[in-house]
Amino acid sequence: MKESWLWIGKYLIVILVALLLGSVLAELEPFKSTTLGAARIGAGTLAQFVAHSGALALLWALGFRYSTQLRRVGGATGPLSATVLALVTLIVVASAYGVLSRFIAPVLRPNLKPVFDWVFIAGILAAAL
Image (cartoon, rainbow, N blue to C red; front, top):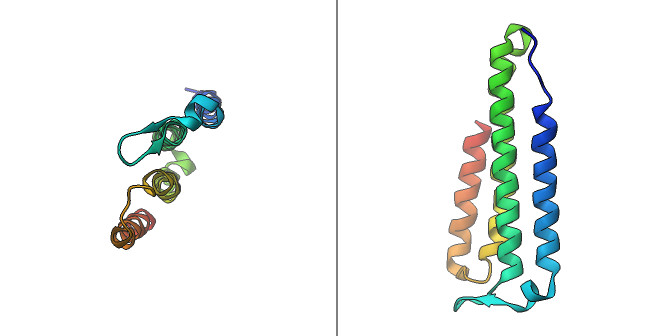
């Protein structure tokens, strides 16, 4: 049975739309001028955080589905499925550091910054192993 690979394009389009929509919303004046909570996090920053987090979640889902399909197809590509999933997880965890650090920078106390950094270093190392 021949597997269809057209779903990859759909995932990529949705990821790109999420990234573009987050950037566009963050640049709109109502989002730039509005702040949320006592920490005064900008609504544009929140919109970008949600969009980038969603794109990362979709990227991981794409990698998971791709590795599952590689396993189903079997043959020479079967053993690659674990490597693909590990690589996508590594990329998502490393990218999540940048996304999350930009969002929580206004509320993160300076003494907690090293803890935040080391948590992501451990996550990246775990994904690499």
